[in-house]
Amino acid sequence: MAPRRTAQLIRELLDGYRQRSGTRAEYCREQGITDSTLDYYIRRYDRQSARFAKIRIAPSVSESPTPFTLVLRNGRRIESIWNFRDADLARLIRIAEGE
Image (cartoon, rainbow, N blue to C red; front, side):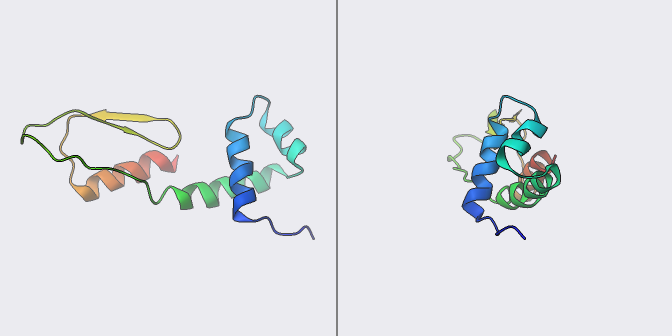
């Protein structure tokens, strides 16, 4: 049985996977892991880390809707002028990050 990987090593594997230039199979072979192990790490650690995002809320100058851009961890951008309640915005982020 192979030794357990640390959370830091798993994070490095996932970061390397996102930055790869070859195929998924090649990356797994180079790292000595199976495709299913990589899938497990993506499901477990990406969703786990996506639960919390650093945000900064700027005070509103007026009550009229102002445009905002939310850049997600995977590089996707959400641009809107809607006024979201906190719970609705959190739900939008969860759905967009959930893939």
